[in-house]
Amino acid sequence: MSGLRIAVFASGQGSNFQALVEAASNGKIKGSIELLVSDKPQALVVQKAQSAGIPCHLFQPKDYPSREAYEQEIVEKLNNLKIDLVVLAGYMRLLTPVIVEAYAGRLINIHPSLLPAFPGKNAIGQALDYGVTLTGITVHFVDGGMDTGPIIAQRAVEVSAEDTAESLGASIHAIEQQLYPEVVSWFARGLVKLEGRKVTILAKECQENTQTAT
Ligand code: GAR
Image (cartoon, rainbow, N blue to C red):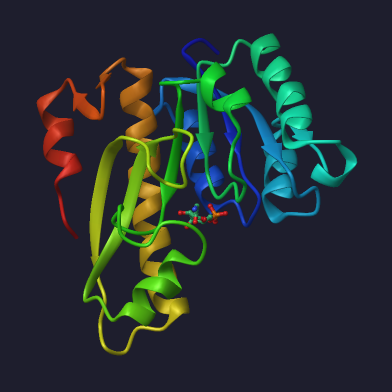
């Protein structure tokens, strides 16, 4: 298949991975998922990739002398496959400059909060503990920091008094599965422009989309 060549990195359940696979196979994303990279060979996302016939690069960080060593191996794989865009979808490891610099401007992440609020682990629990009435999701470029890169798109999700980590997590996941394929489709159409921290989406309908609250 022609179009954007995508690698997804994931460590967990793979609901975002699955949404991206479906969007690529039904033509919403003009491109193909060429590789899953996972540091958790037992994760459900790996089974999902195998069922979809997508090649996997699986590794155990403890088998390598350093983070840079396993990332160097990953970069070689990405280069060999001529990957255009690296999409982190629940990949729970901080990247080193080995990947961040090799894929600068072509490396994105989804995070379950309205950044810069609640970066890092357990963003949904952090939001509930803090008592916010509005949280959401952010898709952003990855830089060297923890969830600090330039923001591409955000969606808000209301928090009700009855919400638990499970119910809020379900609401957030449902919106992530819509927004992430949409954002990746903008990359496939060459619509995302990055200048410093400013991200511009070059089609008007997409600019409206980034601002839609649910
Ligand atoms: C998603 O909610 C994603 O936003 C989050 O992990 C989940 C993965 O779910 N990522 C982070 O928290 C990154 N800091 P999935 O495996 O079902 O796609």
